[in-house]
Length: 350
Image (cartoon, rainbow, N blue to C red; front, side, top):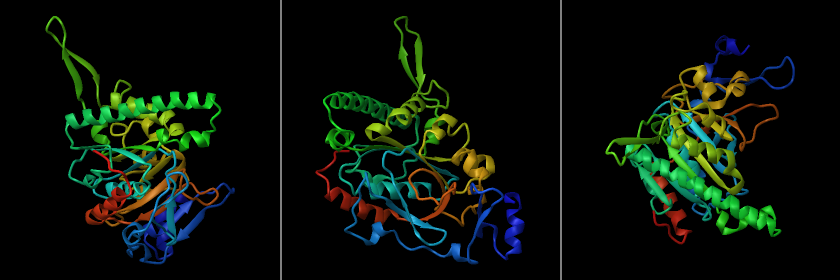
């Protein structure tokens, strides 16, 4: 039935993107939702972050207003202790979708950010004065800096782990430990992460005999990659001490995004991608086999529309994914929101 999606849509006088089908657990059942003709091409309006100057955020219990689902209902997402991956083709709204969540979370003064923008055209510039680290640029040197940033995140995670064990031995409860300022949430954001996974940069040094030696590669997809290893370690252990990673990447392939890195994320979201195999790399096999179809979105026409699978967002029982039309927050509005967030903090030297 899923393979006959186009024919079924045509027989209902709909475009293919207006028909959404999933396979629920109930035997012999296909669940369908059919949009009113043309409804999904209507704008959804501005983000509450833009028009509500008094909006607050709570990392632990709050949910970010990301956009609307296909029924026009508000799509809210929890970011509490969740690693996140957003992927898709170039110029389809990946950075804006990722940045919108960071802007909401910045309204919680407890949250710390370290950001590597490996495109480097100013998309994250408003986080200067909010983020502890802000790296902007696409070169091997920027990949090296981003790797150091994530490796320092690993060190912070390990320090917190040791401290947590000490406090637990003294009888502290988990809630009391995580409310301690030493466990303030730390979010490591790497946008255009495919630049890191594709980099061949290596540390070089001169041995005593004068020959040039090469250290482990900073980037790459292999187990020797320092960037990949650091991301993997945080995926394995960071959640418990509120150290999380968010990655945004183009064209999900094994070269741009290793399987072990993809699988470590609690929230996986995809804008339009070119093929079903890319959709499975972005979201996982199970959601796509059950009907999630970012490869059926329309390039250029469905900018900012994400198919989201995993934890953190409300799904109907048995529903493997949800399609979200995200609010677009332009650069000027993002700067205004960032200024509000800065006003709630004591000041951050980036």
